[in-house]
Image 1 (cartoon, helix red, strand yellow):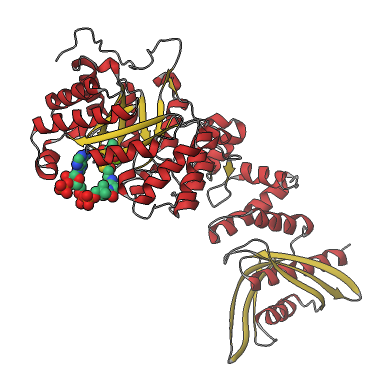
Image 2 (tube, helix red, strand yellow; image 1 turned 30 degrees about the vertical axis):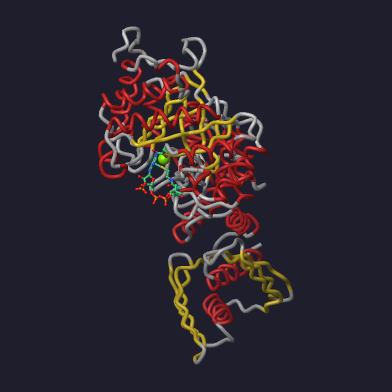
Length: 526
Ligand SMILES: CC(=O)SCCNC(=O)CCNC(=O)[C@H](O)C(C)(C)COP(=O)(O)OP(=O)(O)OC[C@H]1O[C@@H](n2cnc3c(N)ncnc32)[C@H](O)[C@@H]1OP(=O)(O)O
Ligand SMILES: CC(C)C(=O)C(=O)O
Ligand SMILES: [Mg+2]
């Protein structure tokens, strides 16, 4: 069974690779079949049609629309997709059994381009324990299945299930027989996600070198993610000459899932210098497709999921943000627009630095002086220690406090303790700083903790005011949102403003009050 003409260099059987033109890798999407085998991922007909429509728009070469014998609903949806989708090949799965193959053939018949995918396990474990068949019976059954499918459709894919745990000699025997029987694509699945990149590379090369009629079929990889290597294994198969990769949106699928389509596509695109391959996929549709599938199945992707996760193009650390602002390629190997995100996200948080803060403030319409930036940054870090994420509303509040509230800080807040309850009056223990001196007062009066905080500030600073207006608003959403206090006080017939922001509304009040007091003092001094 050796092939004397085979070379050891990877080459696609469908389109000869040349150093000048990249090799086209066919994308076979099985979201609607293997993906749907994911517990909790069942979709109804309308949902499947919507997903199939997006897959077509995206440029998927083959859509495996379902397993028609599985249920009348599966049959109906494969048929409807076959009637509706015109650009992609529509494929139906079948066991090597007459009724499966006939159902698949009937379901895909209306398609402009159709494929029947027959499979039969070949590994010793599956032969012995699941199918209870001898190797000869397997070959005979595979050949009969492929022939029956080929009688109904010109495009027949055969999968020796569990190929990656099948003995080399037997795998070659089955593959050769299936191609002789009319299979045009040979898919060698890693059904249980067991193989490794180097091993699958060797297996694909071995089949290409030893199966004499291998040039009559396209080789395909179908990898599962049980050990987290589905994408790496698929790409290793491509390196070994596979011309088709089977994958799913978001990597959904049986158990730990299949190779993620978006990762395969972007790896081939981003590293075209290495793989010298491309696909027909419009990568800008990857994020919309991911979102549609999550919405349809209710299965969300994790934030740090490659390509389509919310954090895939988000940077929080100051050093990275600074690099990104100077030159994007310092920390990004792909552009977010290329996969369908609107832009890079420089998330402001406790790891951010001045460069990102200044940039965000500028985007929000504030041009900060170096001194203002230092002051806002100090407040920002204090806030970031309290809050998980800092939103634009938080930044606006902080900047406004520093810009509009900017006044020499005669009195500053050191600390406060508030006690209050339904059955007891408020009690505020407040410490303020004046020059080098720290002054503490305990106040037990007022209609509530905010009123008591007012009294405490008045008592320590000796400045008694009449409150004319007091507004508190949440600067952002969420339980940890910062509260912004804006107040207007009257002192000796004149009005003064005060602004304070904090995640604690009592602290916002004290800061706003101190801001007003400092204005009064500053005006007194002229
Ligand atoms: C690796 C994969 O992803 S393979 C695809 C897996 N997907 C699914 O199974 C989803 C849809 N499946 C179903 O709805 C059902 O399993 C059906 C309708 C296909 C079959 O249901 P049932 O007839 O009740 O059989 P059941 O599922 O219990 O067992 C599978 C039978 O198929 C046989 N079988 C498994 N693979 C093949 C094959 N490729 N060719 C022929 N027979 C096969 C098994 O040996 C078993 O036969 P047995 O009943 O004689 O022991
Ligand atoms: C049906 C086959 C291709 C399969 O899904 C697998 O082996 O994982
Ligand atoms: Mg599978």
